[in-house]
Image (cartoon, rainbow, N blue to C red):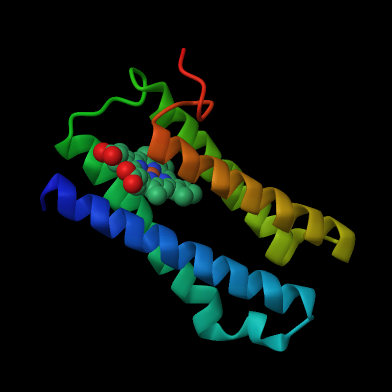
Length: 128
Ligand code: HEM
């Protein structure tokens, strides 16, 4: 697969992960049983695996080293934070207040990671 094809796959799975997260976040907010549906619990994992596959394949094909490219390291750390906060928001958060705060924080981290991707700067808009 070419770098460009991987980048399209990455961007597509990024859009899908956001759409699925917003949908599940909405179902969490209205206490919908649809959050527990089998496809709702499985599909995001398949999509996120594809997202990560495309990201790592781009690093290999494009000879990008996260240790030499701080913006990539920032994205990896951001992705881990997004996954952790997302789990608290949709599953682990004990109270509704905790889940809502985690949902907002996860979306903020997601926006940060997307801004890092577009600007290739650890602090988007600020070049070091
Ligand atoms: C929440 C997680 C992530 C989001 C929202 C995200 C978002 C994006 C977006 C929107 C682009 C396209 C940027 C453009 O228009 O040029 C992109 C590109 C890219 N992402 Fe991600 N990404 C995520 C995770 C990752 C991770 C974990 C890695 C590395 C392991 C990664 C590596 C890359 C690379 C190498 C590119 C291509 C940059 C280029 O050549 O222009 N991404 N990402």
